[in-house]
Length: 82
Image (cartoon, rainbow, N blue to C red):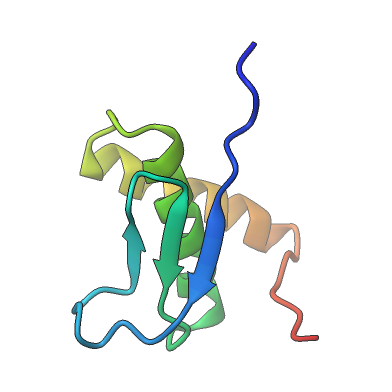
């Protein structure tokens, strides 16, 4: 069985890139914090799926990310600022 992939998440404004999230395929993802909490969770999951399953189509990644986000959201998972 393969070890879980290590992913580094960087939160920064991505205005110049015209994106809310970026996956580089090397374990690094960047997320724009200027999103609603639900959209932020969806984007994080979306970019993690790109990192873990780089052969998935964009449509499949979008559908899977939104499905996972909705399940977690209904279970009251939320971002907690520390």
